[in-house]
Image (cartoon, rainbow, N blue to C red):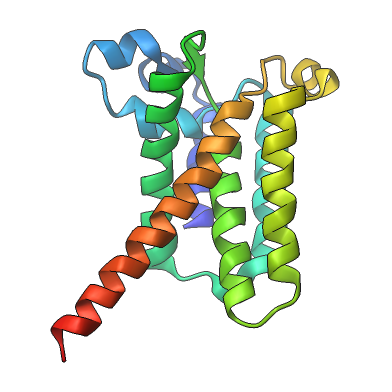
Length: 186
């Protein structure tokens, strides 16, 4: 899954002609182009933006590799992509376009920090607290101006928050479904 996302993001970066039909766009969504909720995450504002997101993905692969399961990661990615896209659409009125994997990476980080915690790691709770503190800080204080300059775009801090919220919702729904399945087999 991470390799497929990385290759898709690189491929789309190298094929800018496709961007217009795939970018998360408020006007496109209002015209019923719902695929943009997912595809917009694969696009990036510039090469620095892409490299930062790919670097973040690589760090998570190293940090959380024992918890990666293809099916759950695919479901989390799809769930969070839609949740983030809808969150930005419904609650961030000023955003007309949005791109990048960083909000999905925030979802991954929160999800895998919880998985780490559940496996008995003392680092898991600290990582979860860290990502929660980061998104709260960003949404209260704002993102770094230097980062916005580097990626040549506004840092969509709300999307990072919706990524974490999506991961928590996904985790809750997964736990509920699992408990229901276990109860049905008794």
